[in-house]
Amino acid sequence: YLITHFSDFQLASLGSFFLHESVFFLSGLPFIYLERAGLLSKYKIQTKNNSLAAQEKCITRLLLYHIGVNLPLMIASYPFFRFMGMKSSLPFPSWYFQESGSITDNILFHPGGFCVLLGTSYATPFGLTSEYAHPAEILFLGFATIIGPAITGPHLITLWLWMTLRVLETVEAHCGYHFPWSLSNFLPLYGGADFHDYHHRLLYTKSGNYSSTFVYMD
Image (cartoon, rainbow, N blue to C red; front, side, top):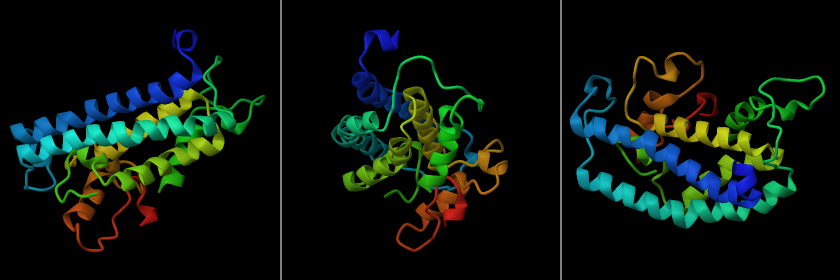
């Protein structure tokens, strides 16, 4: 339905923007509710809570930054993605390696590589603060996120998968909670919220804990 009703430009730019906003806010807003309601407080890393005014200010600025920075970046990057071979047409890339195809034709290869390539201002972070930063920093981080896909020219569905995983990862790293099911309990070298929260608590010192994905970069 999408490829027959929308152009490649609309899907790659506007479609990516709406996907990003949906995943970001749907995954980040529940942590505001958890903090306000005091639910699952035993898993909260810091005892300090953010004020209602601070949370509302964060959401308002995020909307402005996303529309004013993220959306223009997605629109401006489309020609380069197109030049590098990104497409949205059928068939979709496979989930596994095929003898007849290139190593970069499968979906799982790209996100793993992008995490390796990828390697703010709240002392007590919650999910939505993962993208709360100066517009220049948002632009830089946005560029760092798309540089991998821009170089490899993946299928659009692969780009959307990477974007979804990247948003969920950074929201989890800034959520302020360390659960028994957190990925950092199971994946070696994965930082997670317990690792990255230390960076925010020592906001004005050189904590060294900047990574939100793999700790080997620190």
